[in-house]
Length: 524
Ligand code: GLN
Image (cartoon, rainbow, N blue to C red; front, top):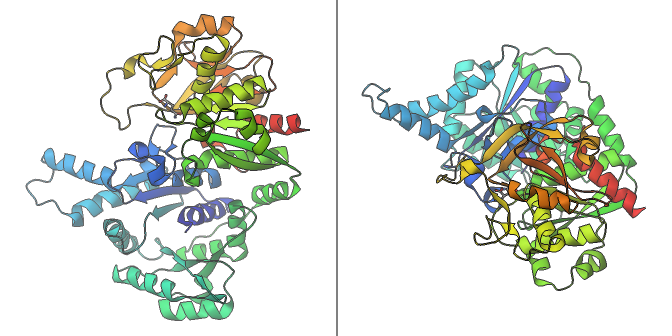
């Protein structure tokens, strides 16, 4: 439906008026965090600086707003119950019966208020509640919201409800689902103040009046989030044109300066100025679900804006390459690929297809960008195809390899729990002189986020570099390899971290930018 984009766009608009905005996501699932979920279940896992493995909506917040994001900004049912049960075991409820109301709802409220109070300069917290009204799981969150609205007073708290206006055959717009969904909210004791209707086209005055009549929402507080054929990053401007920010601030009694949307309109100008296309092959294993590599796809789009070129995503299931004898026919003949990106991933399936794609890009001088697993794939390819070790592998995929060029971090060997135990979050990388990574960041100290267990095995450093593979960046103590680059190649680079998480439409990640520039120039 687009709740994440709607919440983020409102956040962007309030920030453009000089307000300090914080974003919070409530996820009704029982998992403590998104880290243990398959990307097929819930899309990508978004990693914050402090190493929280969160819902992908935090990625939207990061791309649209400047809200600092940490563990505190992602609240799940799992975390809430975990905290309440731990307190109960510690005897902190003093003999009382522990219940959903008030104990679970108190925990939810206190977590939201903690974000609000993190900084005395905070003006607004936008709390997005995942799921759909009527879901059993989201009831405690809606109940907490109801209490909070009541306790803070209507002027300090506002309820924005996103609803669907479908179009039926014959082009008629149906307001019925919206009426029902608002009724369901009212049954929960929450009267929406603002409606954002997701519709194929902008709603006319009479439709808005009809919705207003049925829902007790004023008709000038009914907005449309219509389908755009440009980019989701136009939505802040679309909401601004409908005066969403003005209505929200008026209802909350907040005074602010006029909106300054320069960065967003400049971005839309860059969007319109793009000329030509580059076809980027993303070789991974979760290709059917767009959300599985969400931040990577967004970062490619951002890079296209900066390189004035449209990035066409060509999603290639690595198993397809694994089965084929002739990678050249697929990547060059059928798909006409200008650059290859191998994103992060876990597990054995499709790995050999990724290695084939890397070998093809390396030998055919096609720009290649490896992220996390994608860097490990470069090292495996180098071991197998340059050094001639047929069984070169990561111990994640083959425990018996005689050439484990990628292996477990020492401290990971005895880890038994899967949740939150990887190398996670922000850490420092130091780029070597004369490297492409240094050229991209323009400074040698780089801070990016990690999410992995396995590492370039230091035992193979001498042989790898002796045969020409460039180790382009290390951790400050020199103990871990953070970046490798191919020699004599237009642009072949892999990083152990995830630069996609920090890319914004208004400021692309430097590595994505240079990768797309290389693909564009190569094509010329
Ligand atoms: N599976 C690899 C590891 O754990 C890569 C992880 C990733 O790509 N995020 O090291």
